[in-house]
Length: 324
Image (cartoon, rainbow, N blue to C red; front, side, top):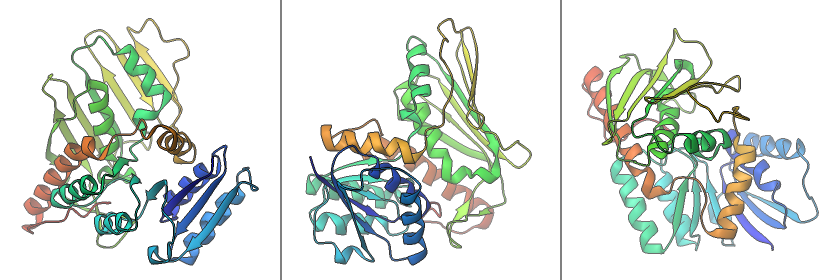
């Protein structure tokens, strides 16, 4: 089967999606929209790094979505969260209906609800590229946790890894493990200093600790502090077992886990995960990622606590959360 994929944005993350697309084992046409010449060159160089079927795969490069003439079977949107909702609506106006969207989806609850409303009106579907729940290691751990009623989940790493950028990954992973996405977050232990976000001068990063609680009394804590090591350590504990996952060095240690044969950790990068995700959407109209609807609560809670924190330390009334 020959399918058409549209990729909007091919910077660092977008170029990794492009590598994943190129690994699909059947003919594809890819329309890549990227106004920046350096980003286009980066993406082309990353295509040269991998092996793929150059006969069946065709790539077309554009500077603007206004140049697009065809409808994609799947459209991947990797641009900044700023203005992304309007961009997706414009792509739906052109006939596109299936979207893989980078996190953070947007910058406010109002924007998010507007996007959900428009996707429903167009008969579209969207998934958010929050991938840890797709990792084989975490899927095995979820099987081992299947009979546990209360789970305590924590993440610790250095603040340079970006709490604002990455918290949503662990909020989603926690909610997926406990099968409840109605998590209530608390940001009272966020650090007062706002950090610079490398993705833009008007964007911010956060450090400190976020906590959360679910209806089951399962709990969550995510801590990014400058005194911590660079390694990202995830701990998952219950009354009977404990998993300690070193995501950086690819190690899992356990306590009270009988069936831990072949239990190791591999961080699965976008250049690989998106191959299976896109293939699944094309073939099954679904995939393992959270849907836009599912991810609304996690996004909304982060917008709430981050905006409240900015208001507390600066007295600035924030409407758009400055993260991407």
